[in-house]
Length: 76
Image 1 (spheres, rainbow, N blue to C red):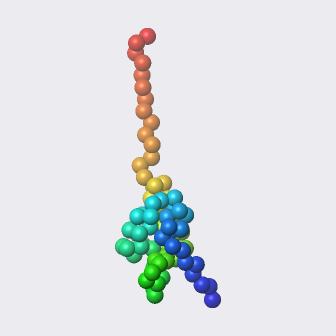
Image 2: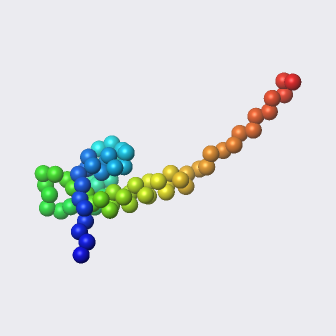
Image 3: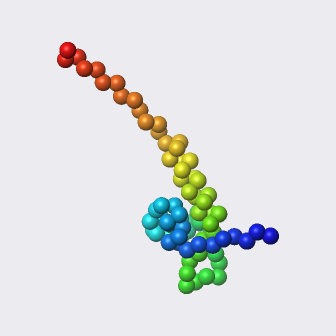
């Protein structure tokens, strides 16, 4: 049986390269799996953090591709 690895919100934010509030907001809206039974320290699963990072990267990759700009110099 595999056991989930749990991490603090600070650790999750550092892993994602984001701020603490990024991790807290995602935990609050349910995108990060919170460990139940911990009241003093909020713990989230490493798997849910990795999945959220992958979704963020996929969304950034699917964003509008850079546009090419053609500049013509008619001064000569």
